[in-house]
Length: 244
Image (tube, rainbow, N blue to C red):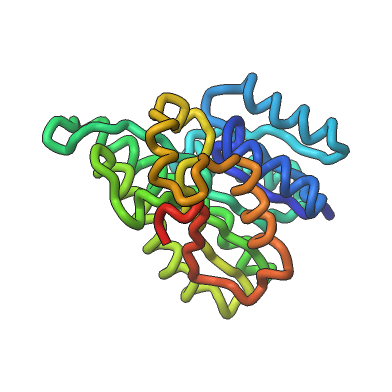
C-alpha cells in the first residue's frame, strides 16, 4: 500500500515546489494534478523521479465536478491499495481588475477555481479520509484573502472564502483524525507575481524581499507531518512580515 499526496495545480510555481518537497520529506507517492500544461506537469514529475521519489500526473480541471469525479474514480479503481493521506488544494488563478470594470468571467472563473475547485476535489477525497480516520487537508490561500488588495476583489473573495471554509471543515472532521489548515502566502516568486514591480513592493515588506516557492513548500511539509498533528483550523501567514 502506497501513501499518496494529491496536489492540485502542481505543474508550476508553488504547487510544483510543494509536490517535490512532500516527496522528499515524507516519501509520498505524488499525484501531480494539472489542467492543461502537460509539459510542465511532466517536468514536475521528472524532478521528483530524479530525486528518488515516485509520482504520476493526473489531468482534470478542478472547476468541473464530473471531470474531477471521473478521473479520481479511475485512479482509485486502478490503485485499489493506495491511499491519499494528504490533499493540497493549491489550484488558483488571478484575473485582476477594479470591480467597477470587472466582467462576469473575471469574477466567476477566479471564484470557481479556488472555491468550486476546493469543493469538488475535497468532497471526493474526504470520504476516503473519513474511512481511514486520518488525513491532512491543506488549502493554499493568500494574504489577499486576509487584508484585501485593490484590483483583486474577486481573488480576495475567493481566498477569503477558502480560509472560512477551512475553519468550518476543520470542526466537522477533527474527530475523524483529519486536520484542515490554510496557508496564506504573501508575495512569492511565481508566474502570478512575475509582472509585479518587485523593487517597489519590497520597500513595504519588512524582510525586504519576495519569498521563494520552496519556503511555502517547507511550511506545507511541516503541516503535513506528524509534528503538526495538533494544529487544525488555522490560517498560517508566510509573508515576510508585510501582514501580521
